[in-house]
Image (cartoon, rainbow, N blue to C red):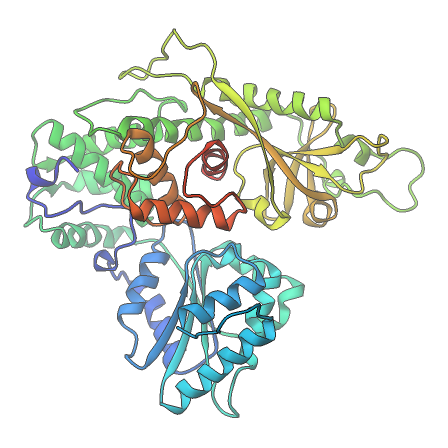
Length: 527
């Protein structure tokens, strides 16, 4: 970062990567860490730590590892899009259990794990399975994890399992099908953001770790504006402080004022979705990333505007499954679209939400380049199971199974404008938005998902060894999706491994090359 030398830092104090040395133990973070250590050391079995996006859960996990008893063996899973067989294989690999050649069954993996845990226990050791982003685990994987609780002696649990995830993990665990697992969780904690009174100490801690030596100085007004924007969310605090430092550096100022923070917020949030970006000696590569962030904000604003214009759906229509004894045609039929209608509606959504501007080039002042009228739009198709639907942040269509009133051999589609905690909001043939329950989605989800991806010119293709602003953009997306890499614009080994993990997790061709399908899915999964 350009301003590090100017302020006397050894490194960027507000990097978004989860570095445990930067963890500030607010009252809530200390309590969360204490709950984890208590559950592990007292062999309580299952532990659940939840919290909102950006509250510091991943950093907390990494700090926990540094505080474990030396006799505690640990298996860490930071990629939670995994099958029940794959998780057993990964657990054994993380514990260093050698399985030998040949195909293995679930029983083979569990037997080997049990033997390892018994031997570890007899030597006076403990074992921890730590799973981050646990809200993304399928029910099948969670049930498989529950079965690990059977690996115990008459008095002690052989393995402690810590499930760390976003707030929706609480809803996942409360599902009737996971009742047995939920009842086994004996230690729980919900991580809250930093208090307003603690914000100054949070910022001071990060500046001290980075070697700031008391410089720069944040005014009282600056802290007020930081909290007003972030509401104590550490990720948002880091983002706005980083931008404020960049603005101060461009003005050669050592003091961060409230006005500077307001300007930083405007740069981060945009102005009506496509805010003007001030290019105050911005480091190379930041411009494209900022444009991506503004695009995603515009999509969200468009979605809200579209929904507002639509008539509210009466509660009686929220359950779209037909009543078994209701005569005549049912409104549910209108949710199943043919090929032509589904594609037409999908393009209409993108135009309405502002996606037609997504591929335009922007000048330094944020104005569109008049030489580019429209982006190139590609229709990307992937096979994704229904539990991955919540990760898709933009409208998509999915092939429908068991459609009502099928139109012969031609496929039918559901057009999903957004997923919700209870199901999804679909667009019907008439262009109306209709909420449906989760059960409806699960019954009719046919795996084949398609969505539009806007891009400029030819499809992107990035490979190991390249260096460009596009690589920096991809690194930023990887970090936002939980694949920790250094954001330096250079496609080196760490970025290559991150791309490989992402591709394997989502069933893409795992070649480590960022082609159109990989880039499109990253785009689809970010807000």
